[in-house]
Amino acid sequence: MRWALNRLALAITSMVALAFLVPLAVATRQIAHDRAVSDARQQATSLVTVLGVDADPTLLTNAVASTAAGSAGRLAVHLPDVSPIGVSHTDQAQISLAAQDRRSVLAPAPGGVAYLQPTVLTDGRTVVVEVYVPDAEMRRGVWTAWFILGGLAIVLVAGSTLLADRLGGQLVRATRQLASSTRRLGAGDLATRVEPIGPRELRDAANAFNTMADDLRSLLDKERELAADLSHRLRTPLTALRLDAEAMPPGPVADRMRQACDLLDEELEAIITGARLGVEARGQERTDLVEVLADRLAFWSVLAEDQERPWEVVGGDVPVMLPLPRSELILVVDAMLGNVFSHTPERTAFRVSISPAGLLVDDAGPGIPDPSRAVQRGFSGAGSTGLGLDIVRRAASSAAGRLVIARSPLGGARVGIMFGPQLVS
Image 1 (cartoon, rainbow, N blue to C red):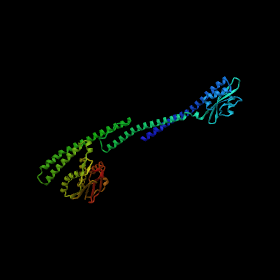
Image 2: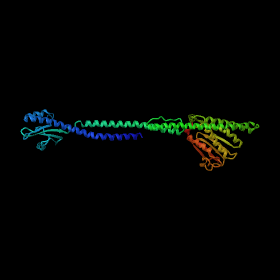
Image 3: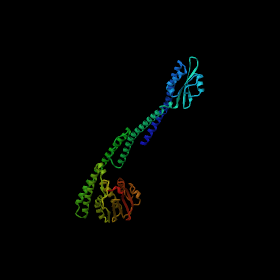
Image 4: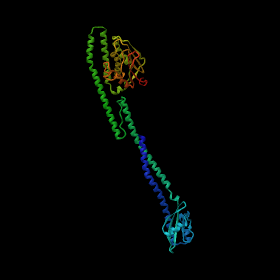
């Protein structure tokens, strides 16, 4: 855009400069020509005055020599039947024609023109005064004027192009800033704002962008508060479950119920805390996937033991830090592990593999017949809503990763998220 504006300014200014310079150049040359002819006319007129007083050849010789043109060998007086006094540069035919017509003319001459001024003496004879004007005299000062005009044109074109470049730079800078802020907002940076610079239209667009970002952040904060309120409302039935668990006779079942209530209470607290975090704080939050997986396996291992499911964990020796809130990773891990417990029979084995390359959950169940429909809400089949895997897909997309649904080496389904090494630290 900036280069296009510069070319437009260059083209317009060049055309305007040419529209003025060409006529000025022609006028300058004509002015120099007219000035030279006018000087020749003045010198011829001065000599005609001398001829009106006395036409003596000796006097005329002195008069011719006293003039600037005569001293330079460019003036001559043609008397009838007498050799020219001075230096002549045109032929006799032109002299005779001028004497016959008795009017001043410009006659062609080698390397210039000759100004011929006829006059009639008191005795009736016709005398022709010749002043030679060389081409150099008619072009004197023309090149200097053309160079000045050319320099002025270059200054005007360069100045207009520079001004257009400065204005284009402001326009491009404002546009790039707006585009960059839009990309950052789309990537989840809701704190980004645009400085209103540039033309009025771009300033209006920047103000509209800032208003939109403020409204979007406010809307998301309200939704987070709503999610936190809904999570808080779950504490009432959880309290009833805890009371029922406390009332159960001592034993393994009662212990598992109380442990499940404690874990559920902790998870509700984490969800509420994470939901009520500000947008900026959530955008900067990073969570260790290995730590979240260990916490969630502590919960699911109780159910696995109750259902006599063999399970193992592969990897997890190094932290895997992801740019996601802890509450979202909890949902991801619960969705992947819950998929095993919901869609495979009891005593079905499963394996969890975690590394900087991703998180995979393999099971030995019946598998997923149509992986492409597994993440479609309401169409996943097997009585599933597809919501769990959709949560995993959206979380993977937020971390610039991808959802994996394939056949497991154990014979069942493989569900996981894979991401590049640049996403972890």
